[in-house]
Length: 193
Image (cartoon, rainbow, N blue to C red; front, side, top):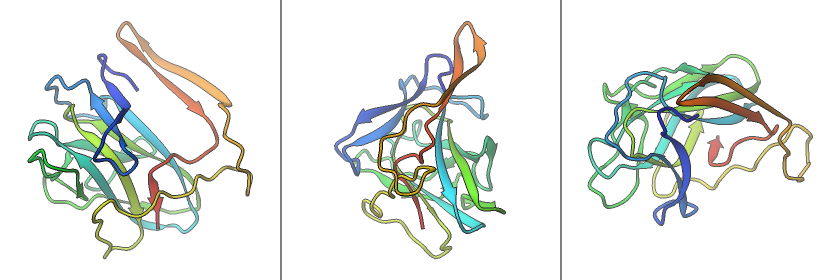
């Protein structure tokens, strides 16, 4: 979503695992302490209900572009407020799985099915390169992380690119709107282990 002319946008990033990342920008020094800021959504499917732990690979150029909020299906998750702890020495991306209070970012899914992981802007200027969702409480993300998961479509074995099947526009104001669409596929760079 776009809020006050800011949004999550794909951008070239030489330090990214695919030479790309999502930029929360433009970088204007804005801070948003609620989930009303720009949001990026990633659909994924859970076959095995349980607790999942979130790892984010990001690049923060400084201490005022190093945090975001994380949610599931439109609601903040455990540790999802003020997710931070990215290294911001300007040298390279880093992994985090905790918020500013050192609470681990996690959620529990009680039934198999499709879900949506949400990223909301807290501080603009943050680049997010990769997201890992794992059921392994002992997993530690390093380097570029695991390979990207295969995209999943509703019809098993279908490799045809997904088509937009529905567009919905809500929250229309003079400064923007929320536009959502459905392709029936799972978002890239979301790894479920």
